[in-house]
Length: 388
Image (cartoon, rainbow, N blue to C red):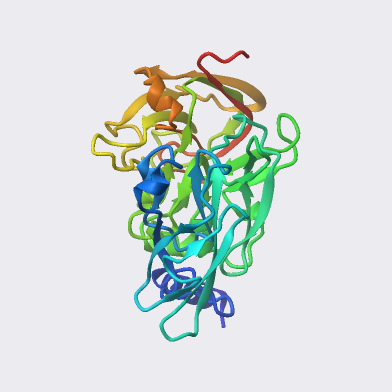
């Protein structure tokens, strides 16, 4: 088989795989029939354990999720008998039984979902954790290698909270990019760890060619990105602006962010049709958004790629206005501007904050320059009434 034909065939197979994508596994294959779609705790007897009602539910659970974590005020006050309700894909069953009483004070409970025909299974770890936050001094020393689809490996950054728990608060688009790659190593992905950071390890974000599959889907580039929030793999093909769910709950009001960067733009800026625009030079992006995570009706609020700057629940935005090209580690600083937070709402973790880095400012619209590279390290968020 010649190289060109093999490449086209691989792209077709990847496209077919992506269209059928879900997360149930049998011999590392995917199937849509054994997912948990939503999970919730209901009843006034349990509501007092949460800061607000929205924390009692997990909706639109991505097919890539393996953990479902409920955040509570205190594990010491948590009842030893809690029933979790689940919505499953049609015909699927779950063990322990849906709605059965379990003791989560002893640690996570493993649930196994089985497809209607009994051929497909998937395990979920369901856990209750106290609302313990990381320090917000990010050195990016915590990184692991994730085994993705198509025999791929890529980097995932994480933090440790004040209790020493592993917190997957950092997210990138690597999981989506894995659909277009085969047997790739972490160094081949848009978001990866590097050994030569400003101090210790650092982050490298690069804008890459998304390959023939990306061009077929009118998504020709993949910008390196890293943000606080959640990546929804199920939306990657047909609703890409909804793949990035921005924000994690916080109980302090942010005032500024500092850190170090290096940046070099790629040579040719292209639009979503891969047409070169000689009048444009690619730009990197660093910004943060602080917003109310519940609307007036008490419904959960999240920001996505299509409203991260425009959602009416936003209180404050911080943004680095320009990031001049430089091969030297350079200090940056940005300040939050907007409305002040309500102290009572803040104390109950009624606000979320996201922090976003991208090698191409317009990468969400698939515009940028292949070869743009942004390095990030030693980032710190400062809060109101907090000593430096």
